[in-house]
Length: 458
Image (cartoon, rainbow, N blue to C red; front, side, top):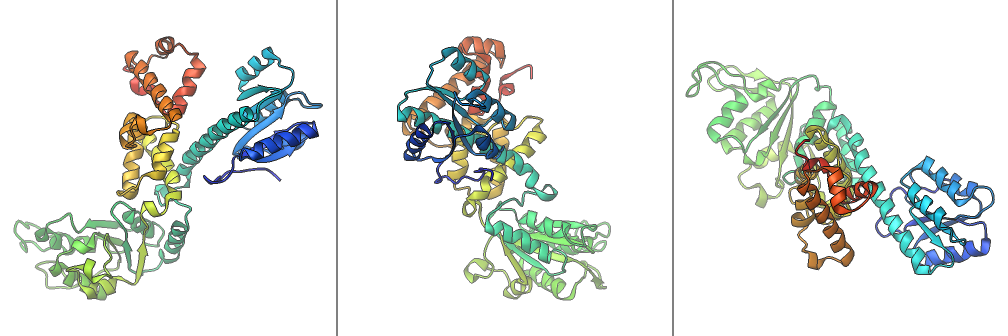
């Protein structure tokens, strides 16, 4: 059975595959790591350990280097063939410095010589596990773009979103009118659009009207249309939105803002499926589905205000409620992945690696603007405004951060400053920083810094 810890929860221990042909040392090292809080799967044979591994493994490999059959370096090479981003820590009792240097250069995460302090191993494994976790989270964000069916971000694996998708599938191909409720920015128009796309009406028009965006003097003509001369400035006949949606779907957003006089006429449209344009004497039948959206609870008289009770009950055949983003936080990384990929394609850039600080912000922010706010945040992130993301948006000053985070932030600021001073030129920047090229690119990835944003040539 493959050992795959793909969806590790924050409170779950990090996974470790431990490999040593010496059973006594294997048991002792396993105990050391388990006491340090890791979940350890121990093996004495390299072939068995490799058989338990695939690219979905969300953990660390710790292997002795001197073993019969496949040695530790060969195990590392096999792991590289499975996934180059799985951290491998090698342990040896021989203190072979040239071997250690070559192993690190080839990509081994760490090289520990026996005898070693328990904390030395635990610290190395913990850092490697956090790095692997970040890699896996970033992959999940990238894959999220492919989860959006029909290019629409009705993305999520929480029970509320699964129920919503299932319900949409069940009612999409019926003619039942639908009332969609939810806070501003939570995706009510997305739901309405999917109801249309998944129905037999998909070939006809999807007509959207925001009831709060038009003044009372215009909304009646917009909805019902008018005959020539029926209203001031009407030089010719005009078809209203209701008739334009014939055979398709009419989406009325923020319907709670609809003027009382228009509500009376809409009630007749809902009941009789007919419309009379302004200035006309004839009644015109319409075949359409109506999807209405409200950002307040129209069932609550205190929130309903001047909205007609009979119109509410006529609309309330099927009511779908979209939960705010803060109530489905598990969906935020997947949504963010979709929005970053979409923004990267729009701006012609490569989606940057998401640093740990942004992951924390995604997890901790209240998201009052819901999905719309998250989408705008993703656009700023892709545009390279990570200084705002990690400093201003995070709302945490340096003296409030733990020392490792302060050091990370300081290092990122030094790299950005060097890039700015040298217009993003890699050669001059790494010379100024005094670090190898590979280290420079590793640090860009870790801090989510996009070099091209500093380059005048680019």
